[in-house]
Image (tube, rainbow, N blue to C red; front, side, top):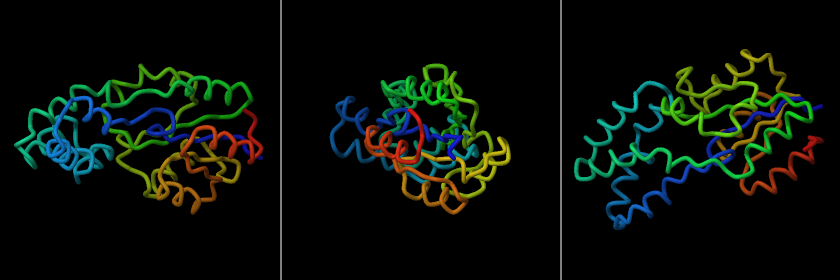
Length: 200
């Protein structure tokens, strides 16, 4: 019987809308490509999520990678509130899970800037805890971050369901015995949860 729900943050509870942000800035295609490859799609981004790099260090390395878009890179990090926007349903979704007796935890790859944005997330006060990657120097899909969550909260994976938008993260959870849901459309995720007997 499912008693625990584990949620990714990006594309599950909030929209990580970096592509839309770059569009809104009015950059041409070449500038958008350069900024993307130097930051979100580059090799340094994951190391911020892992907690190895501070935001300041990440900005510096990304800017060194492509100095031609240094100003645009700085602007990207200055506008973090426009990059990460909570979905309208997230607060009620978590509140309903709690009202039905489930433990709700977060398991997310997120850099140290999480500390500056979490207070804007209306769902956050309702979760029971979780692990954010930068805090433990571990990232999904590596198994150690899942094991850290299991140990911290004494979770039985066979009684828990993990929701994430990435197939590689889902596969790692399956290895450890979690029920899993690959999140695309929210309505479909709700249907999948109900299929596992979760009351929403």
